[in-house]
Image (cartoon, rainbow, N blue to C red):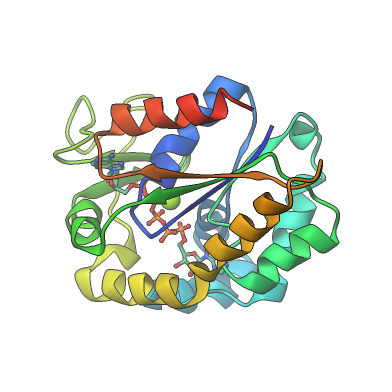
Length: 219
Ligand code: AP5
Ligand code: MG
């Protein structure tokens, strides 16, 4: 199973990716998590992208395309994978296609911008695993502590209101054209074209999860 999750910052891609990857036994490829790990490790890639990410802009396409193409070659991707946060520009989508990486499903999680700011201001994350919580909507069992490891949760540097507004505008300009791109591919209905689904992401975490399992069940 090869899945792409599309959706604005805070739409719930990371949250739902965890459920889906467990369900299908496939790895989550979160480009945001990979980049944050590089920043944390202070690697050359991390040093290059740190300021870009903190500002809410996108990292250059060539870097992202190389990163993902390499990751997909790993043995754990043989049975499939879920892409969370990639592609987010037309050149990135085209690079996947040119590399012959076909997809089963592209799923857009739709959430209105007003809801996003509230979601991201309450988000807390466990950096090592990418597990995502929300103070009100998806709380950890003990506030500020990861359920699985007991380690502290942190707030992302790009979750401040001004940066979130910038990320939303970047999403509308650079990533929403992918919806038409994948709708067109799906309409071709060839063996290689993915199915396209759109899910209402403003429902509760459990409702969104059920809707996703529902649409993927038809594949
Ligand atoms: P990335 O890490 O991918 O960030 P993003 O796309 O902005 O998405 P988020 O991780 O903020 O949101 P999410 O949809 O995963 O939501 P979540 O599940 O956490 O990218 C970060 C940066 O890296 C980019 O800005 C860019 O600089 C760079 N980058 C990454 N990929 C790139 C690429 N391909 N090209 C170029 N640059 C790239 O949920 C959010 C909150 O809401 C949580 O608190 C959660 O608990 C809560 N929540 C989730 N679902 C619900 C629900 N149904 N109801 C209520 N609350 C909910
Ligand atoms: Mg995420």
